[in-house]
Every structure is written in C-alpha cells, then in structure tokens.
Image (cartoon, rainbow, N blue to C red):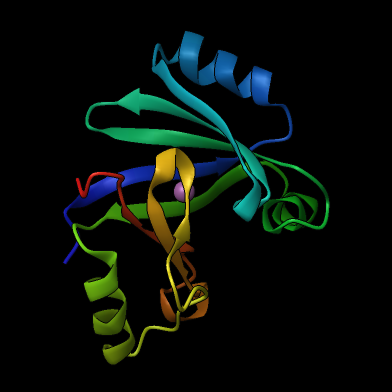
Length: 136
Ligand code: CO
C-alpha cells in the first residue's frame, strides 16, 4: 500500500536554527520552503536519500503544530508514507479500521495531496499519507 517513507515531520520553534542543524550539521540539502496555510505551518523540506525531513514551524498557537509544541515542545511530529493514489488508499485504510483525521485529501507541501490518520488508531504515531504532485 505504501511505496516508501516520504518524510518525517519535525515540529520546531526556531526554523532557522533547525535549518542550521539539518542543513549544516547533518549536511542535508535544503530542497523547498513554503508556507502551507491549510496546515498552519511554514515548512522546509531537506533531502535525505529519496526521502525528506520536513521541518514545521507553526503560524500561530492555535494551529495543530502550535498546540503540539505547547504541549510537547519541539520534536518528532509525524511520519509520512508515499502512495500513488490517495483516493484509492483512504477507503482501504477506512475499511481496515483506521480512523482518518482527513476524510478527504487536502493540499500539502509542493502541491502534494495529503491526509492524516488519527494516532489513536496507529499506535500513537501521527501518520500522514502523501500523494506527491505528479503521482510519484
Ligand atoms: Co508532513
């Protein structure tokens, strides 16, 4: 069902400091930076092999990532798996008993289509399904 791990999402308070850590100390190439209003974040993608690290800075305290930071502090936020066809995948997950946060895909970073699964049905791991733009 899942092609590969697309990215891991990391919640940060200071985006520039996080870029310094991943980009300079870990020598990952900065691939993309975008404000994703639908997710309430400024996001940065860095390349690691075929996958990415996605750094997430909340646009405000009332966003999902803002609430996460207030509760947990900076840290690992979610894991994202790539799929070829998110419209076909979500009903299969529902049929498998997985609770969806997003019943319908929404626009994610780099014009991808994404949906989040509820951590209560994924052993506590906030899980994102990603159909990259262009279907791969
Ligand atoms: Co993500």
